[in-house]
Amino acid sequence: MSAGELRAQARACFLIEPAAAKVAAVAALAAAAPTLRLDPGARFASAAPGRPAAPLLVPPQDVGRRSMATPAGRAMLIHALAHIEFNAIHLGLDAVWRFPDMPPAYYHDWLRVAAEEAQHFALLAAHLATLGHAYGDFTAHDGLWDMAERTRDDVLGRMALVPRTLEARGLDATPPLRAKLAQAGDHEAAAILDIILRDEIGHVEIGNRWFHHLCRLRGLDPESAYPALAAQYQAPQLRGPFNLDARRQAGFSEDELSALHAAY
Ligand SMILES: [Fe+2]
Ligand SMILES: [Fe+2]
Image 1 (cartoon, helix red, strand yellow):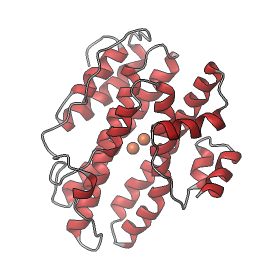
Image 2 (cartoon, protein in one colour):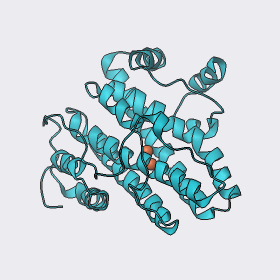
Image 3 (cartoon, protein in one colour):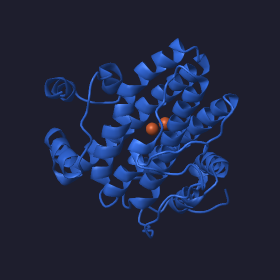
Image 4 (tube, rainbow, N blue to C red):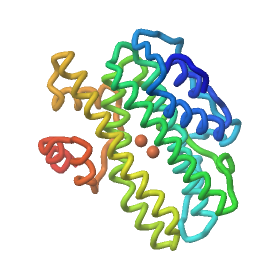
């Protein structure tokens, strides 16, 4: 990555279409970040993420069913996870370039998230290759990016709905999925999910930290602001079982954890 400004470079990565080139560019940007100029005041024209021509994006109900009983079903599942991570790269980069006037640490945190998502994608894509497939071989849906679109005008809404809601759901969903993959004999995939879970706790923690920072700035009580934002942005209904340990490590309060239990 050539010398330049960090947020402009994050936007340039966001626009790259080929998956492998995007992964490499994000890794290079994260490595160069400490020496790059940072302009928190810069404003950029809105943009949609660059993507390869495949996978074809379809409505969620049109994505094929995934049974882990067969290698083909497992490949579809790994593909779906790779697609989530590909979108997560965009979410990390988007948090960097779209929202101005945040402290420098905010931009470095979200660039680190983008770089970890790129690693997750690369691990899953490499595993998919061992199953005889590549990213783009199956259809995919775009639910995760949809929430980024909905919250593009407010960084508080973004922190509430993306890391604190969607990525936190990933903390709940990963252990049962990991168990199923291990049971199907795919220990490689299970080991990748261990790395992902570890890193995702960090992403939710970053989201929690900046959510609380923004609530303080705006004079909001975080525990009443969250349900209001969840309603405003039509957060998906949460379903247990919840990974309370991981959520606790990611900075949710005991009151929030017991509210989860009480509400669902
Ligand atoms: Fe990830
Ligand atoms: Fe993440």
